[in-house]
Amino acid sequence: MIRIQGLTVGYGRKPVIRGLDASFAPRRFTALVGPNGCGKSTLLKAVMGFLRPQAGRVTLDGVPMARIPRRALARRIAWLPQENHCPDYLTLGELVEMGGHARQGLFAGPDDRDRLLFREALRTVGLQDQAHLPVNALSGGQRQRAFIAMVLAQDTPIVLMDEPVNHLDVTYQYALLGLVRDLTRRHGRTVVSVLHDLNLALSFADEVVMMSGGEARASGPVAEVLNAANLREVFDLDAQVIRHEGRRICLPALPEPSA
Image (cartoon, rainbow, N blue to C red):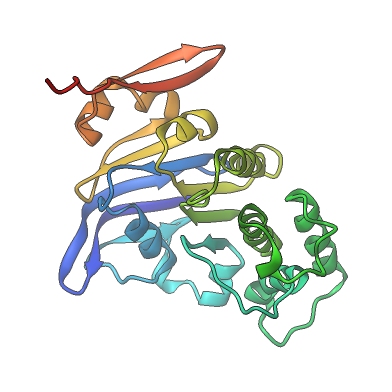
């Protein structure tokens, strides 16, 4: 389990997160939601060790993250940042192999188990016939699935993602988050992801941490936490959460028409 205790962290001397407490349940899909600038991405960067806490600590199974060597951490946690780029010459197959490099090192060649992981990762995201293609020749949705395949090939029990469906059309948003949900339900992974669309969080996440002003204002099972009262407090949003055909849907109130 990843646990955050009294975390204060930011950029330079200016804190973005102040005294935050949270934890991410194992083998569950946790969504981080909240207004822009509330610290969601900063929180994930602090968990990964890219930002040094000014106060508090982040632990993995009780061990402070700062004490875990980077290679050992790469065997435990895979990271998918908000923006991903790769050289024009890199093929999809070579990109996925980079997941193995994160786990074993740049100069360690893949073994039979690695090659099986690479094939399985490409099959899982539906790109098993595209391994020979340059990544930049793929469509936007295929590229995002390609980077998820690289994360899968890293073969870690925990996956952290910062806005994995950003800039994708609705078809790819639902397909990719369905894949992410399967990582927890079929593969037992722990997934934590920043999401902006509340209806996507309601549809796919198991747990949610609602952030505002650099603090965690509410957390727990998504069906309990994403309610009208918390949406009003965190987002200043007048909305109802209703059930429709077995699903929960967030319906914001429309603004009054101007005179």
